[in-house]
Amino acid sequence: MRLIRIILQIVIVIIGGLAVSVFLDSREFTGAIFFMAFTAVLLAFTNILKDQTEKRLSGVSLYEQNHTAVRAVLSLLGGFGIYLGLKHFFGIEPLPDGSGGCRAICGVILLARQAFGEAIAQLVAGFLWTLGGLCLSYMGFKTKRS
Image (spheres, helix red, strand yellow):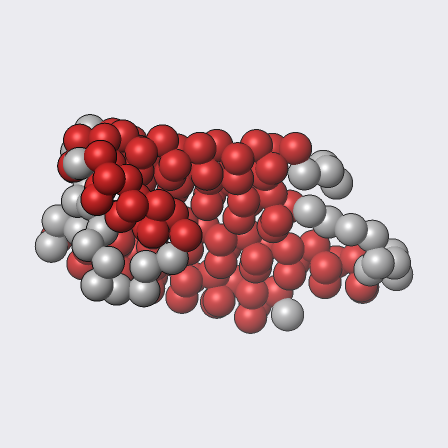
């Protein structure tokens, strides 16, 4: 099982590194950050797999709650939300136009854009994404430590 986990981690790092390099080569920094976070989450999951295997082999009950993966995912999502909010604050990220699958935050941004104009919509977008990211990061840090 250990050999399979190590091979899996090597494959994750190689594929994640290739994806990040492709995104960086095409100057898609958001995609590169997404794949770095996705690779980190997959590596965290393989680490949890190691812990579960060791507990199972040692006879320890597997029903103890381990919140490490939840904390990592929430913190990474929060960091991405803060990053996206700062990109909106500084005008780097364009505002959504409603052509895609526009949902909650995007819909509020579109309403602000129609009602108050482009500049206020940038601030609303930055505020909403940063607030969402801070909330997710806070939940990640406050999740019960194992």
